[in-house]
Length: 396
Image (tube, rainbow, N blue to C red):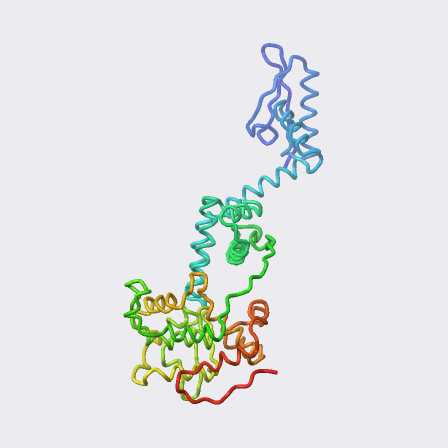
């Protein structure tokens, strides 16, 4: 580009002026400057042309107001950054926010991306609950604006439970990774928040005597006046479902979706298909003899369709109420099985395969060492009355 030419002209009033081209003007438009002497006009023209030569035609002289603002800005920066670096950071922040989306949109997009995948309905439910905590506490901010501090503060306001806060962060982390991949966030904020140290609680484990009492609770409660009227139902046909939870660690939601065709009493195997599995991963295993014995108490003609009986939810509540379970004992049967199986057989891989765990870590952390071998052996000999069986040997 040719260098700018800025001629000085004498005005009819005897003053001297020149026109600053738009590309050199602080306003971006042609600007006329007038001076009382020719010497002053030449000096200012030289300054304008020199700035153009040294810094390019994008350079310009600051106005008095701009110079004052620049001075205040430099004081605020206090040597931590230059004005250019501060301006670049501001522009980057603006561009980042322009690319981002509201938190509610991330939730919808992430859940949609998981449709048709192997993720279970329970996983999606937990994701919705995790997002609900943030939306309730933070409103619906842009994902790019949410900081570690805001996230931690929101979770602390929502709950005093360390375990629940850790679980919420664990659920949100993959969603933020999804946001980073789409350019809606610069970093996985939940993934970078340190998890809180949680003291492990001793799990509720049924003894063999309690397990025997639970199986006995699968009886006819129509005349049981200790139960509420709506729970006075015949629960004898619920024993197969409870036996699967107690002697194979099948989750309550899995047993509710399981069908008799997945249970092969002839070869002694149990198959949990993907559509019944909580984690949408199929598994199969050899059923303990005690489980097969309880399944065989169900008449052959009735071994079709769902394993759980009609009116299952009411019958399940009736058995639990008759036994004396509380709401916090939701997973107690699965924990009971894992603890007794580890103590009785001492085979971590076998127990893990039946439980459907990918690694043995969960077994060691939650279930190992809570049951004596003698009681574990008795647990796996809780056969139905009158059933003939061979004795098992506990692991030495």
